Image (cartoon, rainbow, N blue to C red):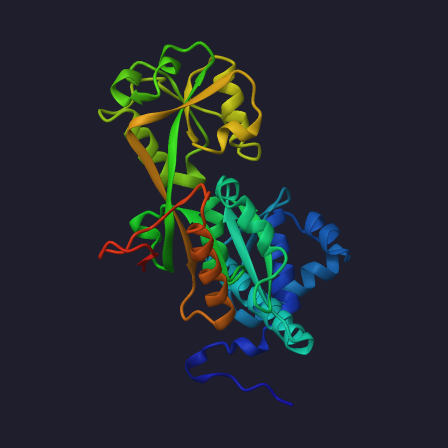
Length: 332
């Protein structure tokens, strides 16, 4: 059957093979054909031929090839996010077909680092499924959680306060989380139940890396240092995988003070630290976000998370409506 070209020289996407997109992404992520071939368990020449076939089909070069490595061209950079979305949608379609056969729907939820500590009990219950829906939960960096939803690699995500530029997704504020100050044992601030922020002006603040949580990071630093931090006054603990424990251990070692979630820090079992409430309070929102329009299974998931935020004993304090009632606030 002859191939029919689209009007105006446009390339019809249905001539691009999914296998070629998977191979392209592997090369883009590995930076070398040999490493990508090992990852895919195919011969490097076969991989190169498939990528070249994709370039011929799209009629643009996707890589700049050198003896040391391959670099994405501008066209290749543009294709990466689209390829991820396409492959994710295919995987989702496959999962939905299997779910339809089994009679259970499936959704995936990404949870930003440290938000899982706030929603620990809720996430355990999610693992058992809700109202005929199977929920797959995984932890993620804050920025990657948002990108996963945008690129259809996840159905929804729980993230910390979004910056204005990140509000392209639909979302509901689950509530606010109260942070206090974590200080070493014997620190003068430990003598007070509430620590005035002004009294911490000369302290060193230990923080997690900024990039995955830019909005939360900026609000925290601004709260501790309303006039801006001085040189060397913010120390970054780079071990994001072990956050917040790595930050707490740095405080215990006397490096500085830190922000910590009240009701969570004490359960971490880190020796040599104490937590006190700040004056004024530091509260950060947790939101659940999704792509519009939300399907029934995503709505069930969101409703479950909103209701869980209202349960007695929850670390999160449920959001309030503008009319004074308790409930979620919607942001888009």
